[in-house]
Image 1 (cartoon, rainbow over the protein chains, first blue to last red):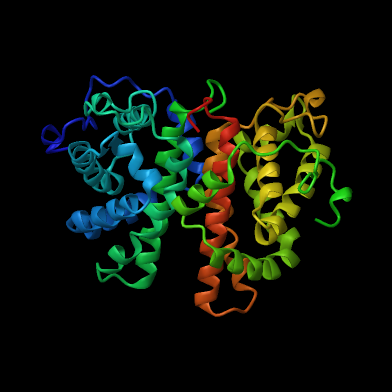
Image 2: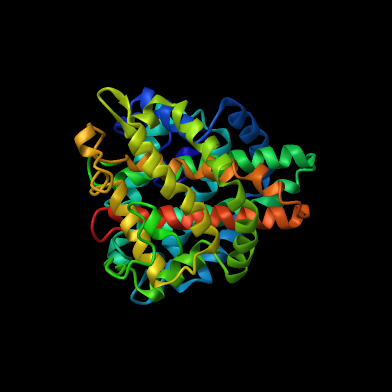
Amino acid sequence: MTDSVAIPGYRYGDPSLPRAALTPADFDRLKAALLFRPEDVVALRRAGDVLVPQTEEILDVWYGFVASHDFLVAYFSGPDGPRSEYLARVRARFGRWIADTCRADYDDSWLAYQQEIGRRHFTGKNETDGAAASGAPPLVHFRYVNALIYPIYATVRPFLEKGGDDPVTVERMHQAWLKAVLLQVTLWAEAYVTRGAW
Amino acid sequence: MTDSVAIPGYRYGDPSLPRAALTPADFDRLKAALLFRPEDVVALRRAGDVLVPQTEEILDVWYGFVASHDFLVAYFSGPDGPRSEYLARVRARFGRWIADTCRADYDDSWLAYQQEIGRRHFTGKNETDGAAASGAPPLVHFRYVNALIYPIYATVRPFLEKGGDDPVTVERMHQAWLKAVLLQVTLWAEAYVTRGAW
């Protein structure tokens, strides 16, 4: 959680965030349903060693993907087109998210920040970066948040392979990454789902 | 769509289902966000040849997984415990779902049935099988629907390998299966998400 001051809107570890509504017991159940286990956290630690030094290259791939789909870049755009300052501010948090996904303690503080991230994709989307004034859409539609699990999963594979680990270890890291991304998006979904049905 | 008469509640191809709200253009965008491409449909066809003859063994694994987690089996249970008739009726549709995932045309008729499946997990959960009278919970919480993407993906791998295809083909089938499952759950999410935010 170092450097958090340097990233606008980054709040992992901020004690003033509301606690997550999910109880620790229900969080354990969710992890069990997803097969997210302690050995996945171990594999993610190694993935962090490999991926974090490649953060900018990974973000280039992801931003390239978004940029090549007008219906995705629209979420970062106003009437005059893409807002470069907004894109840059999100990029800083997105880069940090790669490190956090690999290194998080998956504890209460992390859960509270997931709740905040979910809220920011929906009802709180533009407040952090002043994007409302630029005419950016007021929310990211949930279907794209969930769908993007796949490219966010698939595109890290070549970056994981660059770490020089044996194929079994690469596969283990990749599976742990998929679980961690699916777990997070499932947590973010709470902001979108009808009360009581999440 | 043969044999549909034999499975209670199975409605793929039923012309009396309401059309999906999603437009064809938006469906294409969703598939693009998820990297779901024509070659995935080809890979799924081969996956169907391999998986469909193993349907009962796959369902045994999935039902074993549900049965080993009390918070999952609860969705099929009344005050007296698991409802075997309800479990059996869902099992017949779940088996058919394996075949449909591999062989569907991903067309308007398929989209309409996805909308119906989503509705059945939430507001329409117990109407099809008379499960309300047995005291089963009125909905499946969305977080488990989304989380189960992972085990539904991971557990088919050994079954795909039994088809004797080369490792590249097995991997291609497995990735296509993951995309198809994620695509479907993302469509089902529409029933759960606040209107206008899906």
